[in-house]
Image (cartoon, rainbow, N blue to C red; front, side, top):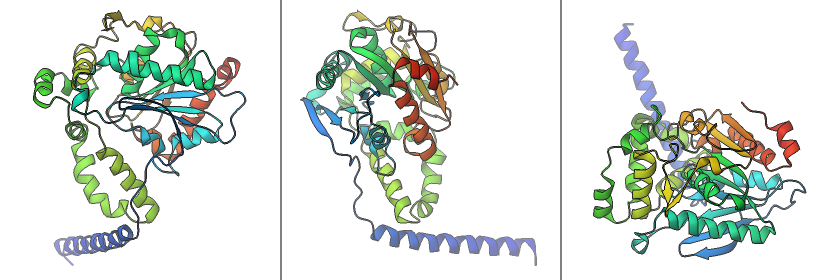
Length: 363
């Protein structure tokens, strides 16, 4: 048999197998009800305009592990940490006895176009901190910021150090001009004033397309080719569809806050160079003295490890640790092994200081 004929038979078989898998995945889809995300029950403690603060109570609270306030990014919905009951960082933390407060930034509309970073950090975030402190009957709160929310948390801790007990930054950009920060390289060329003038608020769909453009083959063509296999059974299909729902559920960005963040952080890199001011108040990382755990994903294509690691030596933290987890920007939350490592690291950091020193070794 000629090699050409053999190759043709192999190709024919591959096409037949793909079509069979495609039909099977369609049958799986027909049997799945609409996916639900963020199913863990919560109590709403505070509502400010579009922003709300939720409280998640563990069934068996730990006697030694302190409560945690989570500040997510503006650009995506916070239920990434509670994607499905089987893939939920939130549920894992609750199972460890950690009381969790979570900020939901909501969906900005045209009336929010003029909200700025001062509004988000010194008003909304500050009020959520106060509410969490009051509810937990503590003078200070433990704060964890995720991605852009980590940058916000650094700014907040520098401006209001008296209100933060301990700090965790998770996949957080700090130095926005590291050579491998591809998203920042793109942001340097944005005429942000023209974008805000054109749109008012920046549409979430545009940001989604920008993120996907960073890995066009993997997040475009390859994902479509893999679709029948991603829907091979109900559990895989629910996970895939939940992720797709989260990806497409991207809030618009308040125009002024977006403009300030792009200019001050991405384009001018002011935070790392001690040049940042918010509402006329200098934001200096050296003002941060709290114990600080800096967690990053070693395979992160959105926030490269180099950007997060730049935080080391920039604060006056009494106890600074870095934790590298072998995962990507999203996989760190939804993959089983990285998710467990992440939850363990967070739980350790919320325990008494002597246990932190024993358990949380630098990587």
